[in-house]
Image 1: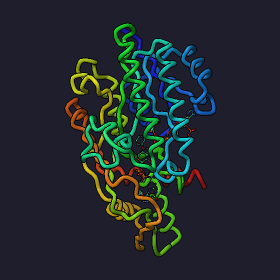
Image 2: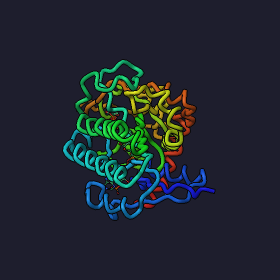
Image 3: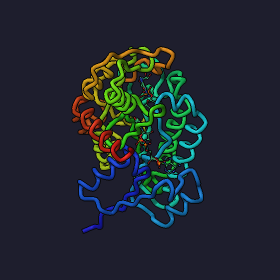
Image 4: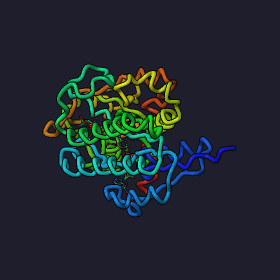
Length: 325
Ligand SMILES: NC(=O)C1=CN([C@@H]2O[C@H](COP(=O)(O)OP(=O)(O)OC[C@H]3O[C@@H](n4cnc5c(N)ncnc54)[C@H](OP(=O)(O)O)[C@@H]3O)[C@@H](O)[C@H]2O)C=CC1
Ligand SMILES: C[C@H]1O[C@H](OP(=O)(O)OP(=O)(O)OC[C@H]2O[C@@H](n3cnc4c(=O)[nH]c(N)nc43)[C@H](O)[C@@H]2O)[C@@H](O)[C@@H](O)C1=O
């Protein structure tokens, strides 16, 4: 019986990384290696090389990144482009140097042009101007896709390299970042509505106009998609990602306006005040619905509906809030 593969999950304490670890464990994988940020700073090339030389994993899930919502991206562009470029370059290069044949890189839906046709297909990449609020982060993610593609093109035949990229839509769920400013919209609004309920505030302000639309995928569905794509044999995977397309979209399949989302989160939390919009804050991309037909054809579909996922996310917030206070 071959021993189970040694799997390195980079970013294992993050929302997606922790979901990938629990999904792998549920599927019987026990040989999972991790390092915290304090133990291994992935922007340090020598430290990353030493880690891979020591551990020599068989598979890598690259779920570590500098991540944040529209405000964080807009406020810290240098950190977003530099740290993400360094982490992905260090990990992908050290993985190759140490014989790792299978790696999964997590990109993002913001790699696509601001005004791409909706829903956005994988071949829309690099066909137009990016959304300004997260362009540095998006360029780092595009570089990550191209790193995987380039190592495959140069080293697949000689070294069996098969590095894949998944492009998640907006994600939410247990382990999310609830920072009031730097978070994404769902955790930000869960926290804001909860605090408004507790403090009996008469109104809650939502950023922007409420008119943009977003697609939201529960993080455990994203983890299942990641493990599913990693496990696909190469011929099947290549059949659905045309030769020059190495990345594959992972979406929920439908989107809603930020206004509808805010109303739904208000109900989930049990807030009874009024919702107002602060149009001094940016809207970002008007819409970014993913076309996930390729991944659907490969046998994965999202399962968790928004109302169910939001209830789970709120419970996670409450559990962590008691730990915070
Ligand atoms: N959340 C979302 O809506 C979306 C996320 N994605 C992508 O999914 C992936 C995971 O995102 P998510 O789980 O939400 O992000 P999180 O911020 O929850 O997790 C990121 C992880 O990376 C770690 N990390 C960051 N910098 C370093 C570093 N220099 N060295 C070592 N570890 C580091 C963090 O550790 P620590 O906190 O200790 O610094 C954290 O554990 C990312 O690639 C992200 O771009 C894509 C689309 C949407
Ligand atoms: C996920 C993906 O895409 C991210 O971009 P984004 O989708 O624009 O991220 P967001 O979740 O922060 O905003 C979604 C919408 O929601 C509105 N909005 C209202 N009120 C709040 C609010 O209180 N906080 C936030 N963050 N947004 C709010 C906000 O104005 C915007 O219209 C990248 O940052 C990047 O991280 C990436 O990879």
